[in-house]
Length: 346
Image (tube, rainbow, N blue to C red):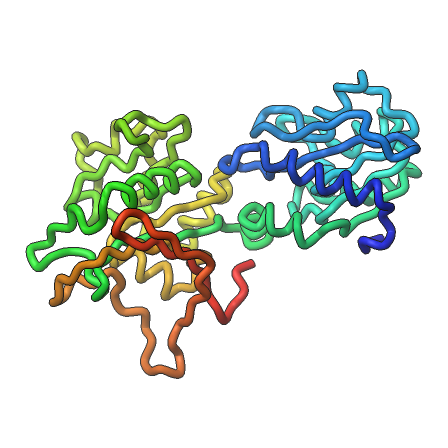
């Protein structure tokens, strides 16, 4: 059963609140951000809950705990279809049935191969189930997680910094610093909002980057993405990445699709590509880029050292056009966020 028309005005308002609660959850981690509101027969809110990250109670369980597990006759309004599997916690569908919930209203069907089916289990137990409520809003909130579940690979953002003429380094290979401090700080914030940072062995061997996420004063931010190195060449024992607080994944592979599938299986759902032109170009050419984060400095370098290399585009007929989602000025620099304008990413 799906359509917004099957939900009453109290449930529609509760779903809006559930979306607000879901946004309190962490961006990173293998689990989706989910919010839940429990309503009584008169449409009044009895309890609220949200998921705080892997290993913590799911949103439905968090809300049920606030009524002592006795929810007889209540309606649960939840952004994502209640899960139906045993993981670090038990199935939310069973918990809702056991608590006496009489009606469940959810936004988007769970696409997970192991976690889906909660709605069917609830219906089998005699619970009234309504799906598809404010689905577009929930899809937007969970875009990255839903895409990774549906495709079996993480959401991939490709980042680069360049001059206005598209150069990422000078003729001698130096690139520090093309952009100013405000732009560089935004990069650290973007690192912290991702599960992993992907680079190639060439970047590691040439620059010995730390790839940590740091604050204005150089302090480590609370979340540190895992650095992932693509390529077969070994990383030196004294490389800065070996001291990264998030650990280090050496793939020993150039197979980008296989690398991304492995990261997804590890629960790394958001990947930030911060390597040089070689890996960025390979990701884009393979159709694996979901979003772009571009930093443009008002400067010129000329010559080679382009930010992006050959994408295998032979003529204008095959040009890869992007849709600009946002433009922001950071000091003297511009920050553009974009995605593919011609193809879906999920």
